[in-house]
Length: 194
Image (cartoon, rainbow, N blue to C red; front, side, top):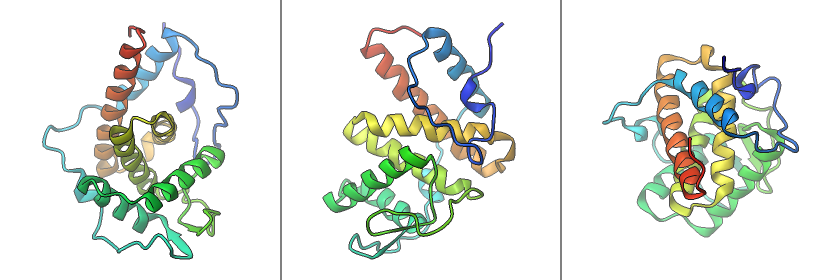
């Protein structure tokens, strides 16, 4: 009998996982991960991600305050149009770095990406938007830090699966399928069968 995937057994929003010194645990661990993600189900072929992102807020990268929802909406649109600025890539990379430290997405950040608010523990939509944006960044750049953070965002979302709304589950299914696609592609390139 397979043991459960260890990173979805407790609420990772209220009890973040540090992942310190996490090591590759072999094929069995990857099978546990894959089985865990099956709970998200499949995604409709004609699924429209852009509906999740509200109207642009004309985020200005020189603003003294970064509002996560506005920034993620605008970054999504820029990425879709293939015109992400170097400054905004630097901001998303700084948010990514902050996420790697805290495993949290905050409502607002200062210009130097220090949290100005409490974490958005109850706003799963920010985690979903962040996941979609970093998935798109990985698709565009193939830089592994984006995929690494996507795996952690999905662990967080998976850990609160029972609390997701029907709509959030649809977006989670989309992200889970993209996560699986990217990870299986990477494993195949490394010669690791799953």
